[in-house]
Amino acid sequence: MIEPRVAEIAENLLARQQWLAVAESCTGGLLAKTLTDLAGSSAWFERGVVTYSNAAKQALLGVPATTIAQHGAVSEATARAMVSGLIDAAGVDWALAITGVAGPGGGTEDKPVGTVWIACAHKGGDCSVRCFRFDGDRASVRLQSARMALDILVDRLRHAG
Image 1 (cartoon, rainbow, N blue to C red):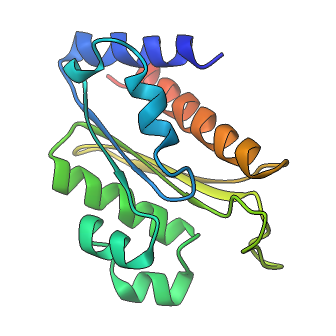
Image 2: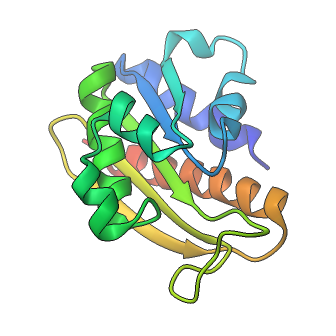
């Protein structure tokens, strides 16, 4: 269930008077939609940015073109740059970024369909980036990606000081 995850995120952020922003590629806004389904989310959710193209990642999040050229849009380096750029651009306390291959096409031997990188960062703190290989069709990969991003943030908030 997604709703309890979002409710816990809201409770934690409200108690700390902190803000969250998200940057999405393969999920196309699903994460932001999921977060804003909760009434009152405007008290802790600052923005969601869909950066589907490489040009958008560069223009809106400051992802260096060299990072994308060297590592690809679906990579640890790009996810890390996305979340870092979002923290700087939005001025928020927490940020999540998702980039991946939802399918059905676009996969490669090195990055098959279902490969997703999720980054979570806290302003002035560390950034965690993890790679996942989700199974299923496009809708399933996108939903699993959004759910995992929420789980990662819940875990980080539980262990933050």
